[in-house]
Length: 259
Image (cartoon, rainbow, N blue to C red; front, top):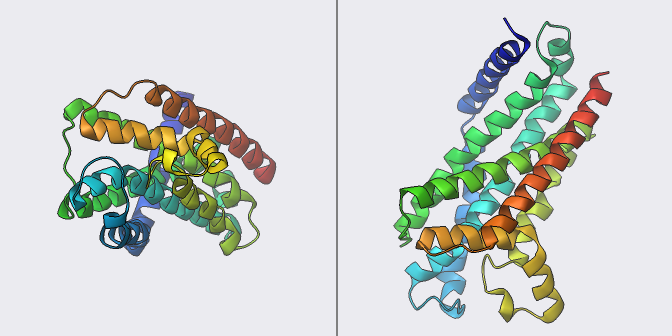
């Protein structure tokens, strides 16, 4: 067996282990989806009638405007469980046990990362289902939906590797998951809920130049079946940049912790 196939086999085995834990505790996925769904209901039924997005009247139009940002909040909420599960494995000495076995070192982290992607995709599907019940409609074709899925998977992958760092370094359970709070808050200072041109100057500048706005605008255009222009390139650049930095940093921290 080659080194690559050995690593893939180990990763698959450990991923099944992590997914089994998630299946035995489905409340983690439900909890991940509950907060974004609560935000969705709050903004549609409480604030939706007072917010002018320029997309026309009616709840359905605001749901369509709102959904991309809610999906990013869902991911930001979900990746905190990656840090939480990795922290528990570190504290329980499970990672050290794996290290004493003839398995690929990288498989331990990749198993948590792949589990995060699967769990978050389920949460995202739940949120989209609720949005459809609230009136969300899309003109997107199959390729547009695949592009949306690709962006969300890439975004999840980038944030999950970011979550690995506190999972390895935190001193407490609360510390392992608390890092996600700023990530959940970030969409509120973006084009996720209102157009950026309605914001005060300094806030608008920050909103227009942070990663969430480019990602939200790209997903929104894809859902509407409209041209996405340069937003998609900016969104992909942010996602890939965060992914590369987080991946390198996480592996450096991991090697130091298990050395």
